[in-house]
Length: 340
Image (cartoon, rainbow, N blue to C red):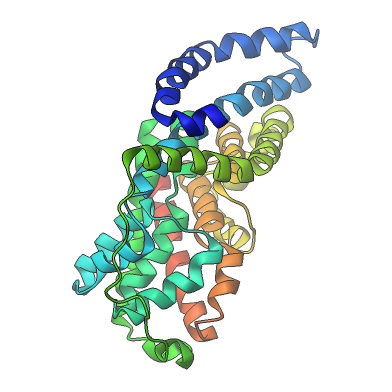
């Protein structure tokens, strides 16, 4: 670790070829490991173990690489710079820009309140602020890399596109509803003390170090969720009958999409925990639209974020926020069940 900190660029030159070599032989290593256990081929337990042994290192490798790259990208987008970029934009243009910035700007549930206050005190419209708050957790690098590795670039692109549409449309609708009166009064009484302050521009080696820090921080936090999610996915993959899941979350069940959203909204998990479960559900016959709706409701309508936002939003605006986003997710679910 000290060598990485001392020679950040050189460590990338050394570690990247090692990453490529390991990823290229991962399937063979996983198959050999499962075979060495002596488990009978074709049994449910064997298939569940095979799923787990292959998916855990695969997802961790993909996650490490993408989090590293995104960590470097995020070093160019501090919260202060993000607020400056969104200031003075019209509603729709602001919604689009805020949604795009939400993908790359550092964000977690604990930062929801200070970010919201910072946006409001800068004069950014409420609808634009909500586009950012929706896009930031829903379209995150963990979800993108897992979808890319597990389902391919088409599904990952589909996820990013639909997430952006929901964030833009929901923020636009909330902006048009003129709900500023449902923000807690004390928020508008805060004045920024950081006006005119200039940010220091980090050197490129520091940006690379930001990538390593992101890996240490994010991967270090989500790996337990990842193991649990892949473990549940492995159990579904090995033991749940296909007909059962097809009947519960298949296209023929018209009620499956809203029920999936209703179940997903109160749940709390991050992308690392939920996407391996979605993969197993799809393999057992769940429809793509229903599975995506479930995933988006869990990630995009995080219960901790909603509770934290209660500090700055009145209950009516909380319900409007959750309702508008939930309706958008349901429509996306039906759309993709219709297309695929």
